[in-house]
Length: 313
Image 1 (tube, rainbow, N blue to C red):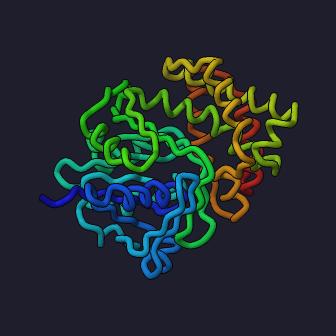
Image 2: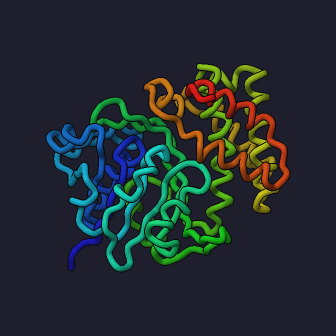
Image 3: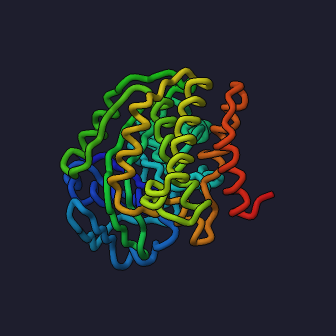
């Protein structure tokens, strides 16, 4: 019997790390195929290198493509690109097998709905990744910390979907990789919980030019980060009734204190002159908060600073 096929759509830090682990540790159970633009020729010719706290490894040969139309039909596709590329989603998605589905491993709100418009809601799942990793060269990923994934099925009405067999199957694929994968019922809650960290620390590193450790060490910046976190929690409560507790916020702050000085993905994009993920990570949460009558002045202030950094009016 042939192995199921899994596609990594976007072989940057996230896709290169998780896809590389699966290609290394689960090759007897799944065929891994990589879609990438930048670095394609390097990886096609020389393979993929991952330096990781879990152990460095090198894959001299990988199934890599720069055009999704060249990929075989897949049973599951992990969407690992930045949301700034979502205007080209229709060109990024390979053909799916009859029971094939897409797992959206992107940041922000509303991302699953964008994919569902192309493949139907029943073929969409979501995931949030807690990962510190960067691309340091073509086909070269460095993983410095964390790595946990939470998986969820998607419902168009944003109600909890429960834990389905296809999620537990995907969880099982990761079992030999050393990465913790948890299946959970409530995708929308997880999206807001991820924003509790992403909104303050992605944005403040860009707005201030300092890394996470300096934000935590500076009393004024730390207060600002905490205020943003509490605004995210208030917006989650007001917009969809999801409760983010003070204990959860305290846990995120503790993790950030323990983290090695880190350049979040938005800071790396800004420094490289790339478009930042402002729409799904800031504009959409602010729109939802306003519609619910929830004031989020700190989020709006930071969003304005980031738009100015991006040269937007």
